[in-house]
Length: 471
Ligand code: NAD
Ligand code: SIN
Image (cartoon, rainbow, N blue to C red):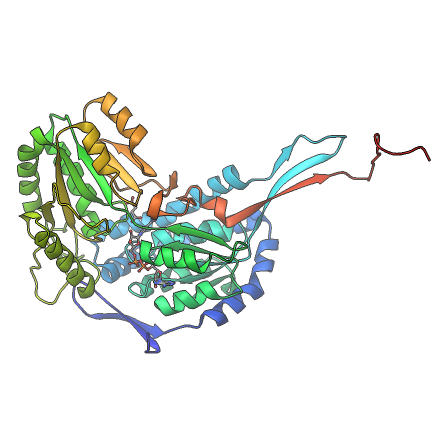
């Protein structure tokens, strides 16, 4: 990024929303380093109180926050409101998670001494956020990190910096010392500089596998730093042995097209039993035809808004064309109803039998459909990806779910529920290229502090009973 200013645009209108100077990673890290020890030394109760005040600040500012998220991401107002609610709820969940996962414990110890398990913060943690949940996802790292006593340098996505700035302002208004929550404005270059800064003790990342893999390489010779990677998915949803195709279609639509398909847990591949194929596709096609795609504040409210920008819309269009060129059979084309704006109509393409189907995450409203004739083949198809975030089965047969649960390779395995909409009160993460075995949400507490075990006695008492000569 050559310019010194970052500008954020509203995807739905193209209007400029926000502009600010690009920051300097080294400066932000140095300030955070100067502040973290004081914050860590505060009693836990103080940090919990501060986080509860943060939840109240967000409550008071909720309407403005909802409006900003909707404008900067293009997601509908109703959905932006659920994101703000999730930001508020994160505080109580994180307080519980801190107590359950990283609380102080007394353990049995020999010879009248006592053994204590306590956790310490790492120091300064960098947080890199994505654009699809510009408040909820970074907040899911930042709240547990601050609770545990770390200082945070947060770099929001270059596509949603205004939401990042709003969030940081809320922490500060609640009393988090400004030196302990730093905002770094910028793009990949600033992200790289932050990741490479020797002053950070770890990095908590949510974003694409491409960036996550680059960070994994960059941290390969830094075992002393904590690295948590939450990445994408190429998630399957199987429809098998179910009489209620309307409900199946609703679950598929919710899985594939909520947030215009811009969810890491969105269903990318629909795997259908051959006998259900025609009626399900017909039901889906009708339902998708009714989906309202529109700007966030439109009335009636849209189901989904635009994707984040024209570049992303262009890339998705190219990916759809590439699937067509490889022999994919379009069921619904990826139409772009307004020239020059990133609105996309939900698309479906049959890719059954495609020899070299790319195993990539198409982060938008494109659903690939695969017909299967037996359930083992369907599971093999579901697992035919290097990712492993989310997978769902729609079926009325419990025995099929048992087989699916046992064999599906993913961190989230659902039954008669969508692939997305993960709970913040549970661990959230995936295997393969979806993460590095450091799940977030409820388990974020685990990577925000490290365990210290102490064997302790008030006075020193010791003797050597074996192996000494008389003397
Ligand atoms: P991205 O990887 O492009 O960017 C994420 C962040 O990393 C941004 O702040 C960006 O500026 C920064 N960045 C980019 N390149 C960098 C580099 N080389 N070094 C350091 N920082 C760099 O992701 P995105 O496009 O903003 O977000 C969409 C992606 O996020 C999708 O792949 C989606 O699946 C994933 N995602 C994952 C989860 C999860 O929890 N698993 C949740 C939401 C989104
Ligand atoms: C996401 O984090 O992108 C999706 C969370 C979810 O809806 O499961």
